[in-house]
Length: 114
Length: 112
Image 1 (spheres, chains in turn brown, cyan):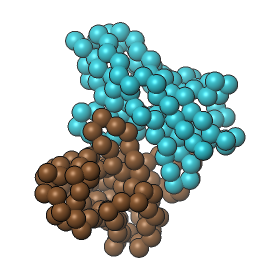
Image 2 (image 1 turned 120 degrees about the horizontal axis):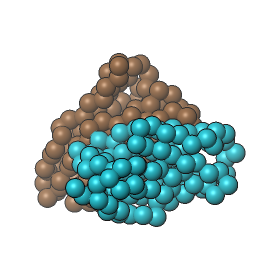
Image 3 (image 1 turned 135 degrees about the vertical axis):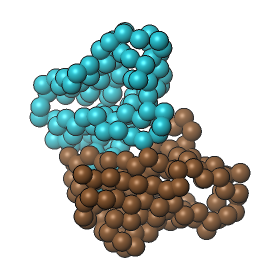
Image 4 (image 1 turned 45 degrees about the vertical axis):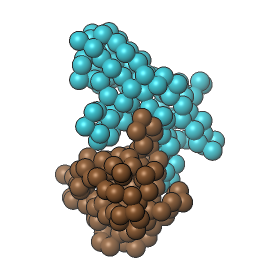
């Protein structure tokens, strides 16, 4: 079976500090990978998605970046965090691109920027 | 453009009541899929169901049922005899290619 891991689970960082969130998937190959952000009390915003190693598409301009150094590893980074980067970050995977493929989500990372 | 609207931002019921969560969508595609997810307080989104546009039969899974009405572009979710463990935020979503368009979510609170 497939599992998706995210770490850390919670993170408190000062404004201006760097960020690295990691997501790994087990039990599948060549997944599509996604990063979402959920601000408090709001819906889900797609930040990045990747269909393969080194292939990243950005949906929203921001001071975040994503990388996919390995097939089942997806990293969300920032060089300097802003207060507005606080939120709940969710990683997800799907089998293939296509309208009928549901996305499966990880447990999330709760980021607080002070 | 794709759009999903969940007009009910918050619903509060007492345990054992039935509750229906509304979802209205917009798409120009003639065939499409719709999903429902549950987000319990722990935060992880749990996939509940996938329906395609050419199957309008209602789906039932235990206390959960879904009513898909293509004529009104709605995909409503009913929980029968609600329980405290049903308390969560529920999202309706419309996929297209690599993208999932989510509704704003409905927070369901089931009180004992």
